[in-house]
Length: 170
Image (tube, one colour):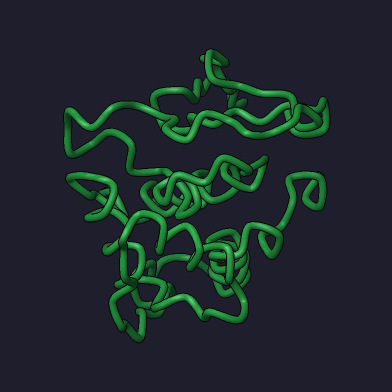
């Protein structure tokens, strides 16, 4: 999808179809062209009417960035993969700020120098990152091999530019 120039913006298990060892992505209602120009809608993904919806949103989306791109799909995919391992949602927030707090609790407080845009978005929303050390993904996902933990850790970077691209893994 990214190779073809599109990003989904609403990755979640309900939008993945699995048959004969093939995974297909469906529901492109919120998809955008990677080369399209921001600003984008600042509130994408499923509305907050259940604890189980919207839990795959990247921090920049939760902070209402309007200049995001395909890395939001990479973050969501990491959340989905981890959920497959542990059999429950990694970040089951009840609203945007609760979900962001849960992300910080797992990943730790983002560094101001490595993600200045995040702090700018947070300030605009009057959100203050809690001081958290974070947790080890190896502890949270004990059945994953070290290579999988490394990949998932890189996919869950706060700084979108630091997340791997889908093209790096084709």
